[in-house]
Image (cartoon, rainbow, N blue to C red; front, side, top):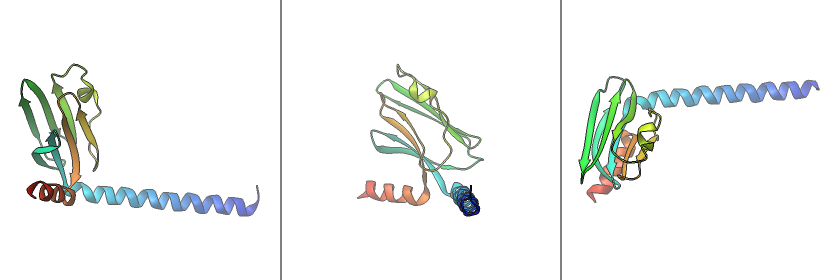
Length: 127
């Protein structure tokens, strides 16, 4: 390997580390403004602020369908559902902006959004 190759690899490594650090900083700053949106068939049925201290359990029941969503210790999870496949219950807990849990048989989604995105969604619903 030539000297210039080593220098180029070092520069690429440093730029990559700086980008990774910047992404982590932005992500940690967004955490204070997050909301958990619970939707049924695309319609928002409940929203909660999402922080490390949020401790909520929401039970969605309609037409004999039941989903239980838990927000606790900085994680959002579907802890119970009466659908046959149970994929939503087996889905890993979510904690970052843009992550989602879906119960396809019941058409229920649990999403984490920033406040700005939530305001835009609620404005669209109002229109």
